[in-house]
Image (cartoon, rainbow, N blue to C red):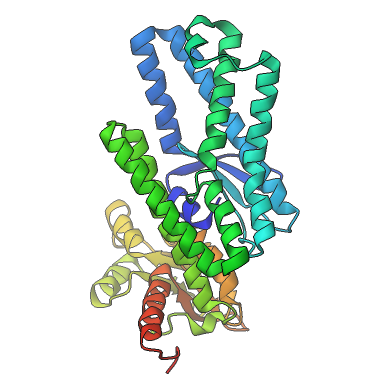
Length: 374
């Protein structure tokens, strides 16, 4: 349930529909997980068991979606929109439009998902008349076996999500508690450190047990926790400042009428990795990245017009827009955010890379007690 996690997970995902304004996306690794379990079940036990396994995973998928919409509907009570939710092998991750910094709001949003999972678990256990002991699972078959498996899976999901590590809900619950006493920024730093420590333990357990799935989860959690800490520190540095103070102002732009060959030449002779694309009047029309240039050279050729291969829908903001509103755009997956003047002319752009450099410079100046800007 974080910008960081969805930034990591949004690539290689696709939409399967929209529910009340929230796009539901599935990451390809989730489908790979279904395929893996289906194939293993088929090879070991035949097509019937493989089908039952896929039905179970599909129902578990539905439980995960309900869990995420628990977060989403709770967030709406605090006027926080959720543009999308991504289904990953470790569960779902909802991208909130913004993270509420009031500890009570974050706590209620974070705990809403596990509360839904707990409610599902209780309903399934009540339907069973009690949860059978694990040693009795082999003696149960048919529909009752499926319900028992779902009940156990939801109990495990409930416990797993309360692990105090980003992007799990327990990490946000921990941060909400710490933020109440220590402030949002320091609370995040401590919660992210705890999360990365938990990830190391999880990865070590995965290595010793030769469980590659645990290792992959640990890597994802470690990276997500670090990214979450970086985003919050960055917001602490840039909060309240206009976009004009953080944008790149010395850059080479490309014209919509130029060819990819001109973009390739610019890539060679500058240090830029992305190029704003403007029209003859200087209005921003898109963005062309280094990867986009190479891809266009290979697939379309150097004589291809730039306006056919550029990213035409990059987010743009006014020079006066607060950085508090710019960072979520980048965290949501944008390659860059264009900054325009009051009359729409391109003044500059902002990327993760230049914000990370700004954060490193700020840290270095803080060590010497030098105020930023001197």
